[in-house]
Structure formats: structure tokens, C-alpha cells
Amino acid sequence: MSDSANNLIHVYFMPGMAANPSIFEFIELPEDQFKIHWLTWLIPAKNESMQDYAKRLIENIHHENIVLIGVSFGGVIVQEIAKYIKVRRLIIISSVKCRDELPKKMKFASKTGVYKILPIGLLDYIDHLEKIAVNDYLKKRAKLYRQYLSIRDKYYLSWAIQNMVNWDCSTINPEIIHIHGDKDIVFPIKYINDAIVVKGGTHVMIINRFRWFNTHLPELILKGKEAVENNPKIVKI
Image (tube, rainbow, N blue to C red; front, side, top):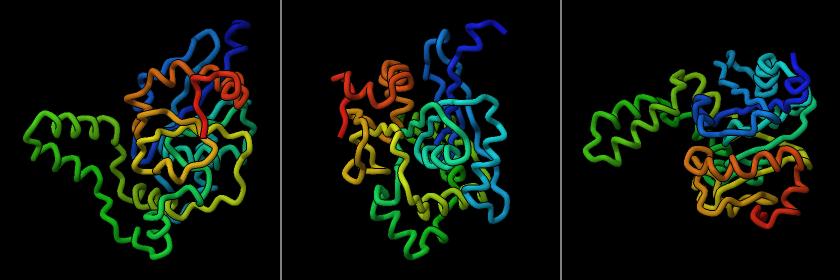
């Protein structure tokens, strides 16, 4: 292995709930500095805790002092992973850092247990949407859903929803870098604190605002929060 290969920073990406790693297909980092790796969802064991699940995912991480980047529920998972391994940088996108940042509807679902009766046939819905699509917008939306949301296992979906709405984080990692869109309707910006704001960014901005990430991720990885202080184009709340 060459010296340059030995000096590469290994960056592991975790997709959002039910999503496959192709949501990162447009993310590009300078190849002379970084090596990208995609993590994929595992099917949870029966009654598996999020902590044990995170430990199983660590088995698919083959480098030390890595950068961990997670989107949405994947952002929650990488925070759990970072409790057990040393990371060079921890970055979450379109996600939350603690229970206080969850929207009221998720807190309500947790308190009442209503999440237990939610329909979880996500891919069945996508199949139906494809069949009834009558215009180009719906057809395009159905195609995107099918392309990126491919985890069909209903036990996984039930487990993921339960662990998302019931996530209990006692301490926020002070070094975490949080990137959030001001148009996110899943985790509204009004509940989010101490985050880098992407103007016009939605919950799926990792796909449709990939140029922002390709521009700013290298600096954020290398300099951490110092990059936010020194770059006026990176706006923070």
C-alpha cells in the first residue's frame, strides 16, 4: 500500500431510515485526501437494543479514527456507534442530537405508544403510488422512492420507528457537527439548536443539494467547528 493510501481519511456514511446507500451517490470528496465507505442497514434481531445494533454495525467498519456521517435516523445510529469507537469527526445531517430536538408529534407518539399501530408497509405504499401515478410529478416521486427507499423488511421498519421516537440521549457529544435544512419538515428547524443551516434545504437535501456538501464537507471534516467560525458561507444557528 502506498504512503498516500495510508494517509487517506476514511469517511463512513450511514443512510436514513429504510434508505439504501445510493442516497450518497452524488457525494464526492477529493480522492487524494478521502476514501468513502457506505454502511448499510442490518435486519435487527428480535428485541435488539439500539446499542447492540450499533455494536453490530461496527463490525463493518474496518479502519481506525474514521469520520462518521449519518442522515436522519442514520444520524442517530452514528451517534450511538461513536460511543464505542474513536472517531476523527462525527457529522449528522437532517437529524437530531437529543430528545429535545424531536418534533412534538414524535414525542406524542412515544408518550402514547401510537407508533405501535402505525402502518409500516412503506414499500407497499410505493408500489401503490406507482400504479396510481397519473402525472409526471407523481411518477417521478414514485421512482425516487423506489430507488432510495428499498428496505422492505417490516420488522426493521417497526424497530426503526420505535427506536427513533423513543431515543433517549442523555449527553450530547460536544464535538458533533450538525447540518440541517431550514425547510426540513420531518425535523423542523425550530426545534434544532447549534447547527449549520442549509438555506432551502429539505429532509432529502443529501440528494438534491449534494453540491453544497461536496463544497463544504472536506473543510468541515478537516477543520471541524473551526471551519464554521472561519467561513462566512457556512451559516450557523
